[in-house]
Image 1 (tube, rainbow over the protein chains, first blue to last red):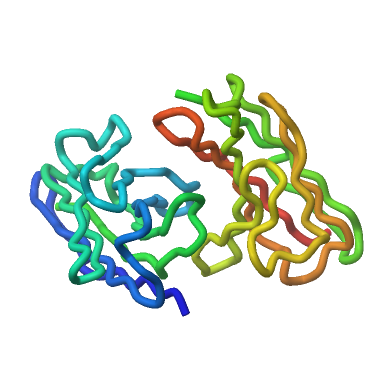
Image 2 (tube, rainbow over the protein chains, first blue to last red):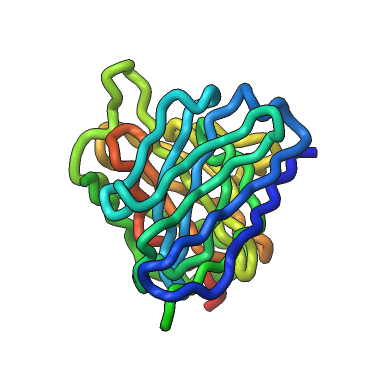
Length: 115
Length: 112
C-alpha cells in the first residue's frame, strides 16, 4: 500500500525557516517524480514544487523561488521541503504527492507563519 | 500563468442526479509532445485531495465509471452521472502542460 507521511510542520515567525519531510513507503520511491502542493486555510490548491526521480531537476512556482528548496534522499525514501524566509502568505497545509499525475497524497502538515 | 476557470462555483444536486463541471483554460493545454495534461481531483471534507481523471479522460484506478472526463484544447468537462453521497466535496481541475502548473479555483458539489 502506498503511504506518504509528512512531518515537520508547526508555528514559525516570519523570516524564519522550517523543513518538511515526507516518508514514502509501498512503492519504489526512486522511480517517481514527487511534488509539494499547499492549501491555505479555506482556500484552493496550489502547486509549490516538483523534483525528478533522480533529484537532478527541480521546479518551483515563482512565489517560492529562491526561498524554498525541494530535495530527496532515495536511500531513505524521503522527500523534503526546506522553507526559508517564510512569509505569512506561506501559511497553509502542505501535501506531499507522488507524480506524474498526483496519484497519491499524504495527509498534509500544517505550517503557520505568524509573529 | 495559465488560468483555469471552473464553473459553476457551487453545484447543488439531488442524489441520483447528473452533475457537470466546466474547466476553461486561458490557453491551449496541448503539450508539444501531443498529450493534454488536464486532470481532475476531488477533495472530500476533511480529507486530502484524490485523483479522479488524468490526461482529460482517463479514470484513475478504482474511480467509478460514473465519472467521465472530456474535452480538448482549452475547454474541458467533468460529468458525474447518478451522484452518490461519497461524491460530495470540492472538485478541482489542474493543468501540468505549462509551467507553472495551476489548479482551478474549485467547484463545490453539495446537496440541494
